[in-house]
Amino acid sequence: MKKIILALSLTVAASFANETTINATMDLMNQGLEQVQKGFVYNSQEDILRGIETIESANSIFTHVDVSTFIKNNSKIQVTKNINQNLTKELKNFKKAVISKDFSDATTQYAKVLNDCVSCHTIIRGW
Image (cartoon, rainbow, N blue to C red; front, side, top):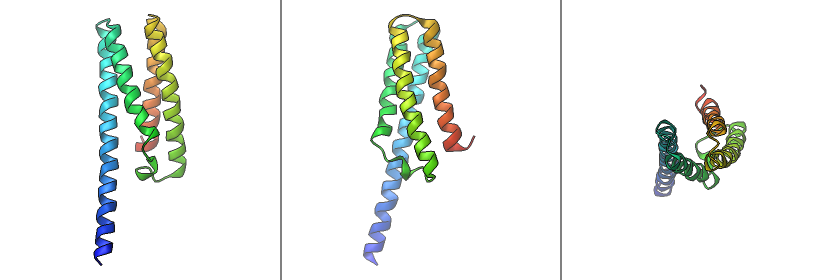
């Protein structure tokens, strides 16, 4: 009986840790998006680049976390992994556009980043 209770406790703790990781990751992504928007509004290349770095850092967490612990549908797991890879690519393109001061393309790349975010939320949250 003690083993069962211990096993259940560990399972609940692991589940809570993963949920905390996801919440913290989403908070980081949100902070990055806000930093990027602030950069566009105030014409600050530095703010945009800092925001991109924050989003990249948050997105990289998904390469280390087992998403199957909070996504139960196997097809959703693969789609999430694909979106993660797309987001990585889109962020690199976004950063290149900002560094080259091609802000017209940068806004297009930012729209692609937001599209990746919305696509993931549509799948995971069932929007």
